[in-house]
Amino acid sequence: MIPASIAEVTTTWLSEALKGDVRDMEIQQIGQGIGLMGDIYRVALQGDGVPQSVVVKLPSSFEENRAQGVALGMFDAEIRFYAELAPAASVGLPEIYYTEIESGTADFVIVMQDLSGMTMVDQTKGMSVDQAMAAVKVLAQIHAVWWNDVQNDSMSWIPDMISERIAFVDEMLQQILPVFTGAFAEYLPEGGLEIYERFSGNYLNINKKLAGRSPWTLVHQDYRVENMLFGPEGSGDVVVIDWQGIGLGPGSYDLAYILGGSLETNVRREHEGKLLKAYHDSLLSAGVSGYSMDQLNQDYALSHLQGGLATAMVTGGSMDLSNERGVQLVATMARRHAQAALDHDGLEELKTLNSELKVP
Image (cartoon, rainbow, N blue to C red; front, side, top):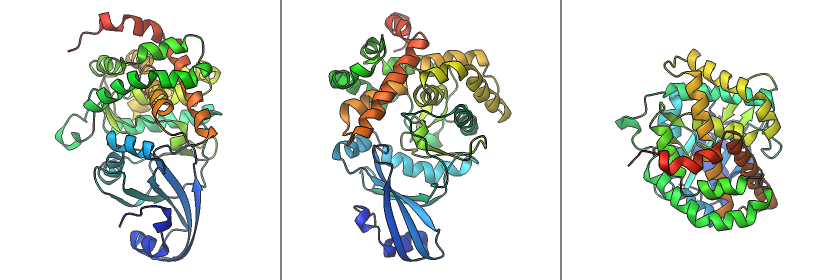
């Protein structure tokens, strides 16, 4: 049975889910204002044959957020990812104890490893260079598992970056643009408002341009610092969570997303080159070939006109952010991603896109 709320996560239910004997437990909600698609709880356990604690993820308490997750197929995707794909990746993923979903709905539950012993970073403050280095290296190792090997029947259930899901989001961006800019224009850098205005309605076009020239892999599509946890500084340990938005397409999407949105702008500008090289070196060491550093640089620049801008707009223009923390997070994302796009000639790209793009 899928719990309708955290109140239904009882000792009896957890005993069945964990195949052990839970005698007592203590529940604490974590990640408020962070897990926009889900409510997340840490549950300390006492019993036999069970971990000392677990994390339980349930759908968001806010109807708008649940509706978005269903419309975009995000809840089904995360459950299938953990069941079917995660075992192929040897690094960067949490241990999953139990999953269940009523397909096509927001009724789901995930019980996973408690990673509270690791460090969670506030995205509004930004991650350190060491954390960024760990994040891009693990990202490359995950991308390498499926590099140039995703356009097959076994992965056809995953939407790609030129699919109907992206077309749906692209249309939504045009509809919510006035709401988003009305709420967040004040946080944007010079030129940022024009970036969002020109980007609205061109998300699918950008994706088509990039998808037609670059190798595809499995892409997280929300690869930001609050969806990962880190070991001690310098250890290189990182675990990535929230695989509900997965897609198929060029890996530069994730790379631009993490560096553009989760580093303070001045830190990104100073260390961007060596972080891109670390990602590329990690791809090569994992067996990827035929993808040059020059092509990565070009793909990375264009990818600053992808997920970061779209996520800021969708989250800021259509979801219930629930508290000031959520508003601050979206404002930070909107500002940083706009500046990253500007830094990589995104405005010029958007101005010439319609005449340059040669796709159906």
